[in-house]
Image 1 (cartoon, one colour):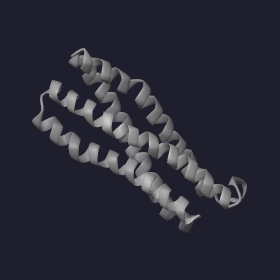
Image 2 (cartoon, rainbow, N blue to C red):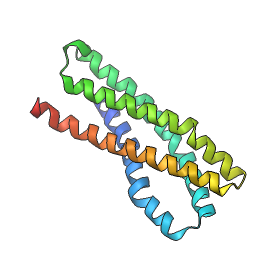
Image 3 (spheres, rainbow, N blue to C red):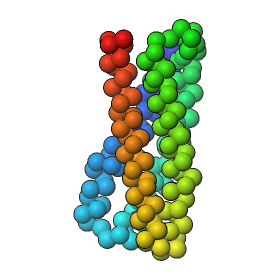
Image 4 (cartoon, rainbow, N blue to C red):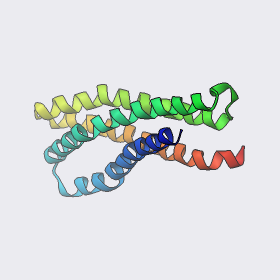
Length: 151
């Protein structure tokens, strides 16, 4: 069970930590220093490296989460905060899948075609979705620690 927890936490750190860095550190600097074409190329490159890690993290989080739940006897006997955390996790995964297959695909095509207006619109949708997932991820981490004491 400890190995499942370790893998679960590591996957969380990769995904949520990566979003935190990208959203709160890299984005403001890129906005300040780079013109739109350079900024869109930068994000295209960053996402190309980060998103495979996110896919691995999402798969690992789902697998280890269900493994942990299984070792605890299944969902039926678990407190409500586990159900809430699971729901938030699935919502985050769904947002990422949408982000990857719709606006990220549009960003890739726009950068390839040097269509900076379309690329900027796609990047803005990605920004909103990453911000949403970051807030959900930080909320879920907080719930891990607070809800057992409040429920």
